[in-house]
Length: 404
Image 1 (cartoon, rainbow, N blue to C red):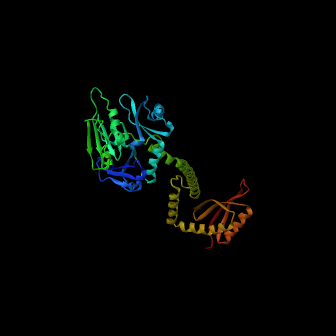
Image 2 (image 1 turned 135 degrees about the horizontal axis):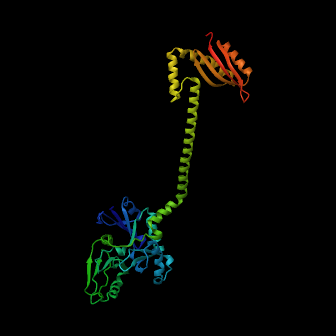
Image 3 (image 1 turned 180 degrees about the vertical axis):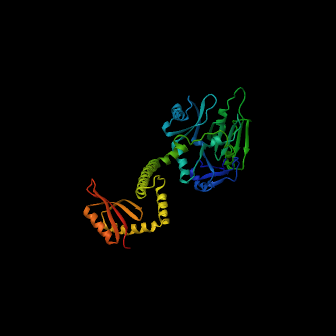
């Protein structure tokens, strides 16, 4: 469990805040500080922040609503309790506690205007509040007792696990006396803690069952000791942290959707490119194999045309024909390249002769090519010449060395 910063914005926001840091066991790890919410925020880094809502702004009550869906219960609570309020329930914020034996739910009610004002103090200070609880439910109190913490001239009263109220010191005795109706001859003990600088209430109407304790510390120190007791988090419904995250996420949903669509599209395009390149690779391999077979027709089994081509060339060089082949290829290649509009569709070399399969525009072009090759010192023979379906001439030339 993380350490906690417990902050009380106070009943009078102009008077500033009080805060204290608690260790992971809930014990005070320092003195109570006073100042602005921004000063408190400067000490909150890495800490869980719990804020106290003034009890004078909170009404604690109970409601019985059948059902187990918490969101539906939260929506139904205002209308189940609306007869208890003179205000319009649309102007009030309702927060539910855990279900009690018998099916009742404790409820904390705060005016929406007060909730907004309180949370605005923290938001402007840059303080992220993880939990907001009524200060009445942070009063440490034994079972079957009534516990009071005097904070200035206001008495904070906890009359049960989820019940309590705030009253001015002057009327505390009268209010408590009216609530202490004998139940089978027994009354609940009242424990009052009067903190430093607080008003001592008039307790004459209460009788001897009252125990008064004077504390030299702040009321916040007393409330810190009861922070782990049963409580109600006011950050529910419209104020829930999950909904706040939803509000922050909302403007980015369209951007995130576009980003996701872009990633999907990129993967689709990448997949299409992969398939296209695989097809191109297959076509290229097929063409390499075709050229290899035309160049070395004696080879019956083709496994890796590129490697086999290299092996055949090396064999030719070892046999002494490699140099002659390269010489013929170089000398005829220069002529063919300058001739233009000549396609070489195949080549083979055997017994010192280079056979080239060509496609040309016309028989005249073929004759000119032969004469040009002969003029370069090569012996040239036209082995065949036929006109193809596209009206181009398909021919085979045999070239062997002449005068170097």
